[in-house]
Length: 562
Image 1 (tube, helix red, strand yellow):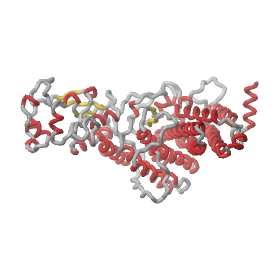
Image 2 (cartoon, helix red, strand yellow; image 1 turned 90 degrees about the horizontal axis):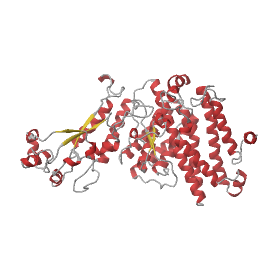
Image 3 (cartoon, rainbow, N blue to C red; image 1 turned 30 degrees about the vertical axis):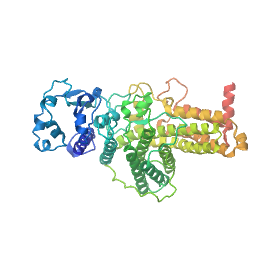
Image 4 (cartoon, helix red, strand yellow; image 1 turned 120 degrees about the horizontal axis):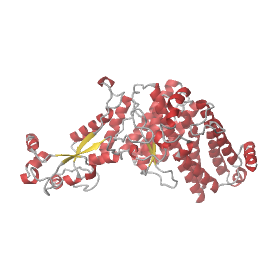
């Protein structure tokens, strides 16, 4: 209640232990995993602190309480014999038992339940199944209101410190268990996929929108972001397997340090508490919400961190690893507002934890399918913002800024197929037998389709808007703005290649089967439909790039005319 360090530490350990009890790979010698159905957190409601707050502030202490509506169970603590028997504490002038012992009996020891002089009562807020609690709620339960003399009425001074400690402790446990330990309580009612140990956490993004100011998140975040970007830029993507894995662990550790720096500012939003806007969002554990700059950066870097941890074992080609790492590096810089470090030796190396014990291949493959798709969504969201920024700069006549953002967007688009290939580095027969059927009814409400991916649709809308600003053919644009013509062409070429690689990737996974979103009587299979999408895109861009596919453009124009 008063933020006593021993009580806070006990609280942290209890919260993590309750969550960790259901993780099968953490302390296997302790027996079978068992997930508690509820945890009752002892706390105090706003209405129950009564006249205790001024008594504590008089001796320089604070009161931490929660809103009354969070309380589910009330414990009767009107009998104070146990407190008064704590003679060592009663004898201390500033201790809570000592303060209570010196109060008149009618003030606190035996008043009626609704007596106005009732000093305090204890309540329990239930966290877990049956009462979803977001990370925000949990932090309110821990450090809601500080009635201390320095910051009366504001968030408790231990909130940021406690959030950081919880995150760091969770990271330590994650390294030992092989799973991500979340510092929040989760609801079991989600669309399509229940949260269970072994699945990646829900990734939360904010709406892609250009024109936002560059984030300013403090010197620690800036330093860790520069370190992570430097490590990703120097990643040994084509090294021998052992050296490459070591480099990826170094990159994952650097991303983990950035996660810790961002978490020290404020905890992550509990994605489980946000509604899914589509079956696709539910299945791939993605949500969208109103996020601050810090929250958007934290969730984005968490996606990068999970992706890097999985890439330590994923058999991705060196070329695709280079493209995905480049997209991750760009997202770190964009989300944190950090500039690339000018001095490559300005930051000390980060300590790399020992690798966790391996999970079964099947569980790794299933998690990888979701992790790779979350990275893909991150790239789509960041690309949509970059393209929207470029279009805005062009409208305002700032060609240099537009060129920079078009270059950033191209990095992300080149990463699209790399992230999809990352997700697909699972055996095709395992995908067909264990994953594919979970993306169609009855496992989900409606069959999953690329048309449901909101981030991708927003990226396509941003490209359409860009081309309305600069609709000129490549030749005409190159005559008046050659750098802009090349930057636009690079983006559109990457977009076409993404479509082409999607065709070959689908063929490797489903061969000649129809997609799960296609009707069985349709004329095309999955590969044919993706090929048509590629051709339409190539036809649209034929006059806008230097080496346009004019053969396809003429064929598509002829079909439309006929």
